[in-house]
Length: 67
View 1 (tube, helix red, strand yellow):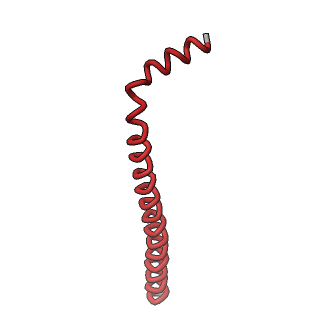
View 2 (cartoon, rainbow, N blue to C red):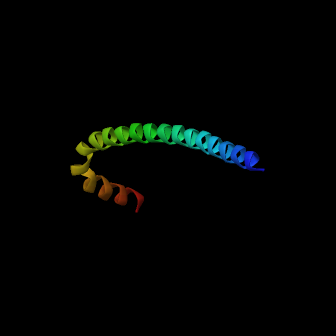
């Protein structure tokens, strides 16, 4: 009975370590994707900076055209 308990514990620890390894790899992949998205958002924000000063005029013109 004691040997079966030890085998159960070893199998449980092995299963948990495999599970944690899989989850760790998935989280690393997600972190890499988020880092890439963060870089893209920074680029978009930098590209949008020249538009910001004229945005009020664009909105007013759009309101006149829509109204």
